[in-house]
Image 1: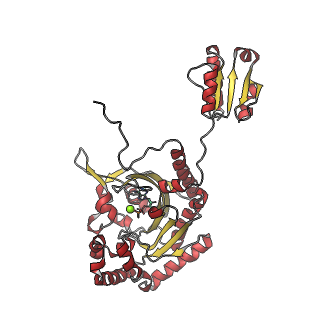
Image 2: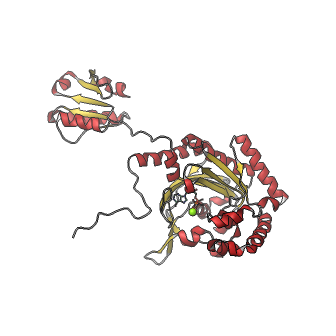
Image 3: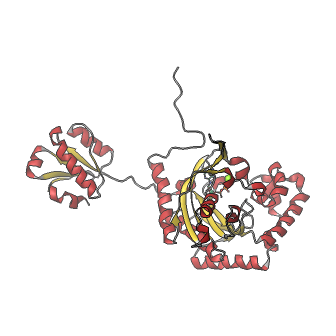
Length: 414
Ligand code: ATP
Ligand code: MG
């Protein structure tokens, strides 16, 4: 019996043609802009020791709780496909020893991430992120610069319109502890009206309730206390400085006291760039300050700040699909000119001109392929042309054709 054809695993996608080009445009743009800010690209492994992502009892985030792809490998070690990159970058900073010199380090990354969640538009099990991290900088200027770089990338991609920066602070440890107590008191008094998920978060991680998408929760959240009443003077000054610098960087922002980051090592700045164009999957870039993470990886205290952005969501928003590169087709009139054509083909490529030659076929077939692949020009080489040291250059857009000396072809096409 015939097997049904194999499909990509649920929540994964093939990137082919236009989709690949949109995806790649997002990454290339982010790479180029982040370099303007002095970020250096790092690549860390796609899988890590599970302890990189699940670090003891402090870990109560949704990702760690239920979204990780974790397995035991053949050697008996617990391995996890990375659900995000920040933890891996911090682990790498510590394992490489770089944490002891040359700080701050500014890191850019791009790559696939893995989370076991319910697939829907803009939400996949293998997805891709770009991101930046400033490792080893406690200054609010670092927070503002990281955000400015993100905004610059969104502008360069043409997706800034309809996107707003939602900014919040989680304060320092003292602010956060006081706020946490206030939230436990407030939500505790309305315990029976909370969704089961939020009820479970009440003691573990009450801040995370603010992030709930449940309707009933949202009504309670609207009247919940905000962090601003619990900020220490130092934390308030830090937040004020971030906002002043953002103004100088030319980044528009909006205060949103509901923006939180799930994990305990986050403090001070928390932010999201949110678009009105992707429905419930509207967060395209999210980040914050995580002064405790490098220490959790076994390094010295290393205050850091960064963001990550979903490549698929940005690719969906791109106003235009980048065009496929257009080739020059080299076309021998008959088999007898094929070898001379190969030499011409390779001269073009060595000169940086994208070119191809069909592997077989008559003149007519080869010209058909040239048109079908939207080649910009065809170089037709017959017996007569070879004898005269020329080639027929056909402009496939204009439909014009002329005889060009072989020595001039590259100059004409460059
Ligand atoms: P969400 O609330 O949408 O689940 P998150 O808080 O889990 O987002 P982060 O961990 O902050 O997301 O990741 C940063 C960005 O990565 C998100 O803003 C989003 O653009 C993208 N992202 C996260 N999860 C997915 C996914 N499963 N598929 C596609 N993109 C994703
Ligand atoms: Mg999520």
